[in-house]
Length: 420
Ligand code: SF4
Ligand code: ZN
Image 1 (cartoon, rainbow, N blue to C red):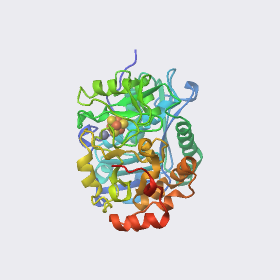
Image 2: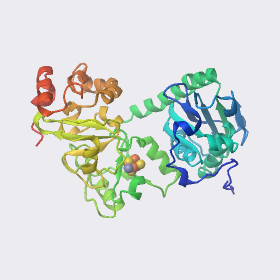
Image 3: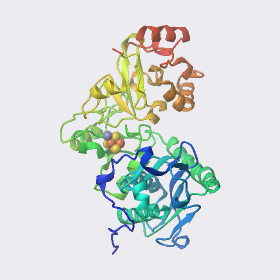
Image 4: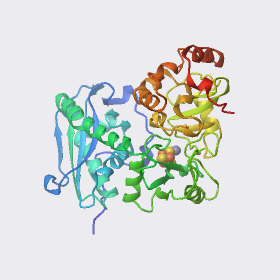
């Protein structure tokens, strides 16, 4: 019998009520900022003999040795061991750190992997909160929430800047790359099952994501491997196995078994969904899509806007205007919420001709996906440097200017079958 840990040994309160807490610059004792200095959060599976349970180690200065209001590096490595532990579970644990650390009174956490940002408030510092308490929180939560697979857990917190550089670049990034590569080698055809995810039904009651190797959840945070791990960790939980044995239409990616699952998990609100079409039976969207793509009729293609982009799109709507008509767990043909990673997928709008339909994206998003998207376009259509044909806000914010640019570049969408 495993005992669940409920008390967390920290000098401030721990409750979900603190999750949305904002800590302003003037109120913060210290900030750890992965966009400026080397930071990371990481779970690693070890052999039980390598781990001393509940050992918490600090390598580097503690918070009271850091100048007030300064930007510092931090890396915390949570090492776990257990007979049923699998390395595929590591990212699932890591994703929970955001919520764990936000539950600490006077602590704010955003991001993941090596792009984290953490603020500790002056009040929380004055109450006695120090670096080791981050370890206490992670230890207690990982041990209690993942008791089925974690027998032993130890946490090392690095604040020494040279050590953070080493841990981020030599330990964390190679591991993140390895995980991404593993996912990149999987295809929808190469697996026997997909997974449903209903984590968003709390605020979007009929929404179901169907997660496949080539189409991650629209929040961008649930890959097929993550959904699989979530299912193994909690078989009655939010991610369920969906078989794909009875195809109806391979072109749009429609399956009888997927439809049945979607009907069941949406309590009958949804009849049928396709995996690869934005027009025919598109998947629903909740509210947490990283991006929205929508048809731009004049150019016979689609524009994509990401959440961070505040400007106008050639569709005549901003991201939030697009979001207001795409969310809510209903099917909206012509508009679709999706993850950033999906943009370079060979399954992106496959039914409508694939990524060649993309005519516009904000510049920053284009830069983020360029390498993978260019590779996909080269493979599918033999086009070199496809991203150069895609317009952005510095080129066009209206349909006419957009069309002129696409004509100048010879964009493939112009000669594809009409979308509508
Ligand atoms: Fe799950 Fe993400 Fe889809 Fe929400 S958006 S249901 S968390 S995969
Ligand atoms: Zn959601």
